[in-house]
Length: 426
Image 1 (tube, rainbow, N blue to C red):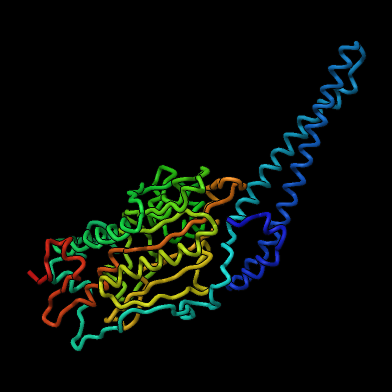
Image 2 (image 1 turned 120 degrees about the horizontal axis):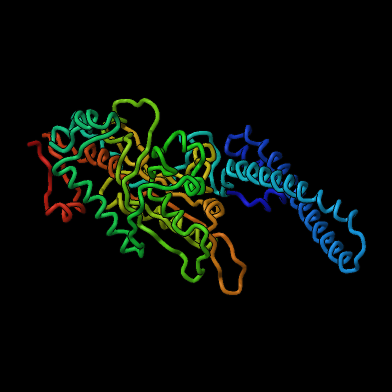
């Protein structure tokens, strides 16, 4: 959530930010919030005045009774106040709710280093690793190849769960676990703490961590309760310290989250987005950080470096891009995408997103820190994918596929797979 004091002081900054994001239709929100804020403050002031009047009249009545003087006129005035106070309290509550809902519709303020643009085509290349490899033979579709290797069963998954689900089996299931174990080991070496998170989250905490539009487009609601299946471990980790004040000396807090993730992934997709690419359930290792505002820029680069190092060790060609204003989403102030090479589609596809959300999530969740000698302030939060296993398995199935139908296991994963070097069709 944005800083309301900042909006009061500089509304033009927020109007300009909407324009940068290509969201001019959101500009009326600025005037709406300023109007609601003024009405809300006027209502609070009027309530305070009425309560003072009530206290004054109570004192007058008590004094008149002690003096045995008539108090009828004062009592008459006092009897009118509770109804007026109740009416204003109801109005104040309604205005507060409308103000909160409107504030939640604001995106985060963009960092000055975010490039301008309208779509992912305008994202700016920052780094690349390895030249894209293009085999001389025709690659099998990753889903077909996975089935041929005895590593997946899509038909039976569709039978029991519907489209967008899959069974992983045998060595491919073992490789998925290896990817997670390897990713966890890298982050533990970097001082991250391992966290296995709840797979369901209450709505009020979800409102603290994500764009409200995600409730319709992304998440599954659990019937009969105020719970949603998580779309990423980022969300419960962000909510973990909600309403708490952290010690500035303990920051940054760096977490390695592991979980299954559940996403609706609405829409129809082409051949190469089926199989293990756009799915409703997958496993992920996530980086998450709570830090002081002066630490977040440096930590964003650290999270990106971790993601890049992971792919380097897997020998996957990738490109890192600085995501433009039109592609960044509502929660991040700055975001990088790390995109792996798909030789079948002959293009780079998104594998990891790494974001600095500044104080946007912490304001919604009430997560602050106290530094010795300084006032309390909101922490900054950062998040970044290290490995979303389904997508990365697809990239490995394409990049490590051999002409004679074998899958070469990346060298760094072999110790997690009993030293096995390749997967062959049964």
